[in-house]
Image 1: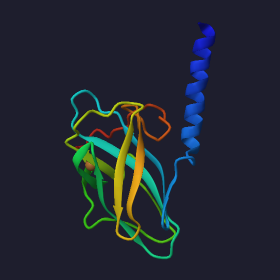
Image 2: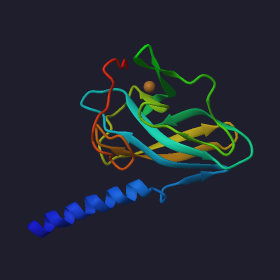
Image 3: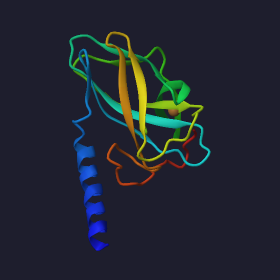
Image 4: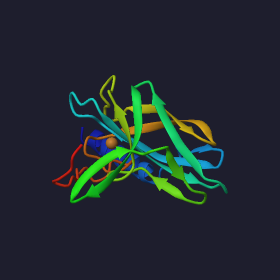
Amino acid sequence: MRATIAAALLTVLMTGLAGSLASAEDVKAGDLVISQAWSRATPNGAKVGTGYLTIENKGAAADKLVGVTGDVSSRIEVHEMSMNNGVMKMRPVDGGLTIDPGKTVKLAPSGYHLMIMDLKSPLKQGDKLPLTLQFEKAGKVAVTLDVQGVGAQGPSGGDGMMKMSPGMKM
Ligand SMILES: [Cu+2]
């Protein structure tokens, strides 16, 4: 019994380690490298989910993320968050998210994110969520988001803390 728990703990620790290194699941598409694709479990009844990933552009020309599709939702938008008079607001990114040559754009909590509207089914921790990214130059790129816990702050499950500013408006 005790050995089983120890083994389970070890598995959790190693999974966390692998998650934080996260090079195994990098997706290459043309000049782009997409990594750290993750999402968060949705609390009961929530119809909106979020997705995060890192896009690196190793090429000499800018590319643009112009759309996202997936079976889980008929409407997925790229949003940005900003502080406005102390209130956190988010809005769709106009005309696509540009990834300049030689640059890395990170979609992460409190910044750019994928907004997965009208979820057809809730996202559960441990799920793999397949999405298709549409880039102007690199074309369609299939990625898989690892669904972390409800309060996760990063692809490896983070510290499990939910950090929200008091004035945040969804
Ligand atoms: Cu949003």
